[in-house]
Image (tube, rainbow over all chains, first blue to last red; front, side, top):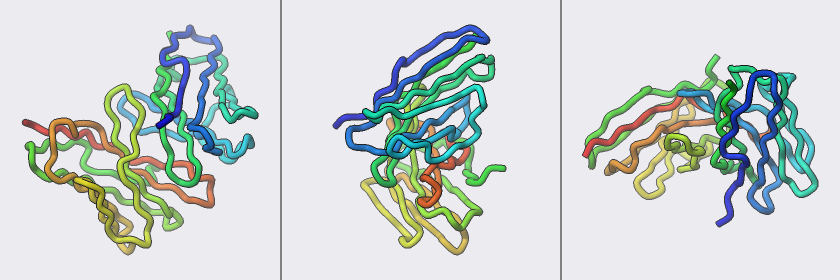
Length: 110
Length: 113
C-alpha cells in the first residue's frame, strides 16, 4: 500500500538559511498535517490543510509557512532558521480520522 | 500544559509479559484516541484507536481499555516480544477541530529476551 512520502529525508542548513520540506500524501487522502518532534519529545502539531485550504494552526513560528497544492502535496517553508529548529518534521495524511505518518525529514541547523 | 498525560516514562518487561501504558486527559471534547508506535528515527505508526463510546478494543496482541468517566485509557500489549521495543505514544483529537493530534509524552518500552 502507498504511504506518505517526504523529501528530503535529511537536510543540513546553516543558521538564517531557508529550508523547504515536501510531503506527498497517500493517494485520495484530503487532509495533510505537519508535526515537529524534538529529541526525546512528543510530536507537536504545526499546521494542517483540508482540500488545499488551511484548516488549523498550532504553535508554528511566523518564520514558517506552508501550503497545499492542487495535486494535494504540501510544502513547509522555513526561513531564518535557528538552532532550535533542529528536529524531525513529520507529515501525516488522512481521509477521515486515522492519520498516517511519513518517515520524516531530519533537519539539522548548524 | 500537557493536555494528555502518559505514564510511565519508561517500562522494562520480560519477553512474554504484559506491557501496560496509561494515559489521562482533561478535555471531554476529545472523541478519538489512537496509539502510535515509533522506532528511533522513524515516523509514528498507527497501532490501534478507540472512540469514547467503546470501553475496550482488541487487535491481535494489542488492547485499548477506555474509561470515559475517569478520562483515562490504556494500552495493553500481551505476550510482549523484543521486537515490540519502541516508544509508544497515546494521543487524542477532536473531530470538529480539524483532527490535530495531541500526544502524550511517550513511553519507552524495552522488552528483555
